[in-house]
Image 1 (cartoon, rainbow, N blue to C red):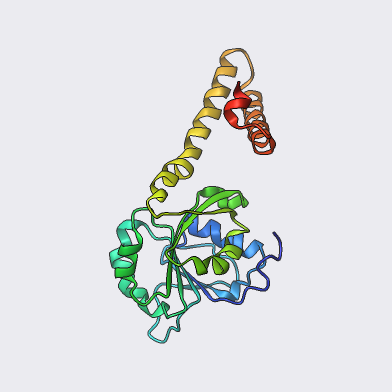
Image 2: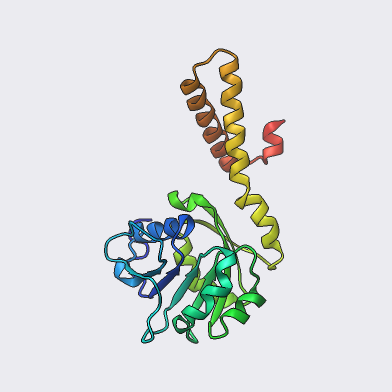
Length: 226
């Protein structure tokens, strides 16, 4: 996806640049987005890429951004919202990854936002392999958001906001179960006499190969297991 965002002209504000926000930022920059187009508001952020504007807060003279990525902890929403109102205009897209804040709540906190999109990624955005579940009441926004999703993984637009609850459980929590499964497989192999390092490498290689086989196969996982 190198260069995929080199033609993107929008100004992006990232509010909260922790693990997920930082991973999305790095994915966008790797795809050709210019650091000069990005502003980050996060007093705790460190080691941001060169060229990215880093602010502790939004100034009184701030102009609206094209996209605002909201990636703070949900419990900080009420405190953060009043401080970034100048970031929004009629054409601004608010992209929120806050799992517990629905469109109605976000609209109350950000009444000036042009369009609101909810996004549920997971940490595989850091390698461009995340499933990306999205929902918005405005279908027209997809053309603006899809190019930004492409470097991060695979976008899945949902039919209803309620479906995000299931997606959060599946793709948000799912990786931890996969990691536990890999660890259990390796531990079992160690109990059978393999060296720990070799057992882990074998377990990882097996899971990677099985996952890719499932992706490429004409059969569903249940049939493959049978």
